[in-house]
Image (cartoon, rainbow over the protein chains, first blue to last red):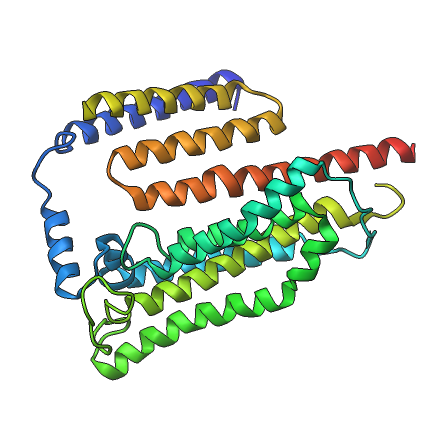
Length: 246
Length: 86
């Protein structure tokens, strides 16, 4: 195909997309209206099951199966990265030299690290009560660990972060989600049904039936997945070298 | 009042997203992306979606720039090694 023909094809496709997109947008409800049929139903369902954070109720109760899919996508994506970024036969590991860290950076990193870590765990633990949840808190907690790389050096990070254990944790958390879902099959008749546990007192940590359990499983899965992912990237960036300088 | 805040947040998003596209150096682009992540998180919070805002803050302004910086470092190191090998 010539350059000109390709350009025309691109323009035709782009124009078609623009027309369809505009037509779809014209049919959307007006911005910021006061009628929210789906929102009202979701809030009613979440209140019926004593879950204070409706978004968590949608994620881990009403649409728990979708979350299972999302978790599997993250799991598979990290697995793919681990395979792609592995050490190949013509590469070797060179221990990175200890780096000088400016004192303010070191101080800042070491002060912020525990605060960030606790915030992450807090966000995971309160997923069913306040905005946030397993995914958000997991990412915060996992990235917080890496402040140690900024504040100290790579060796210190490697000491607090045995990657093998995080890989196991990732798999365990993913299976915990599945097992909780299967328990729904025993307690009632549906996979991931939130009917096996008492719903508890509204707005307390243990409220919401299986929501806190699934939330915690996602928190652990995401935290471990992010740690493993960053570990592979760090390995490539800092440690692994090609053979004979290539 | 709320509309004004939304308009300001939208304009900030548009501005930082444009800067992210115009910037060519990947390291600077990573930093601009971090700023874009923060601005997007503000927009989501203004639009009453704090859950999405938190995700955006954690992933868009911390994780993605970090992965980009690490990738740039690896590529540069490889370039240096090649330069020395010749």
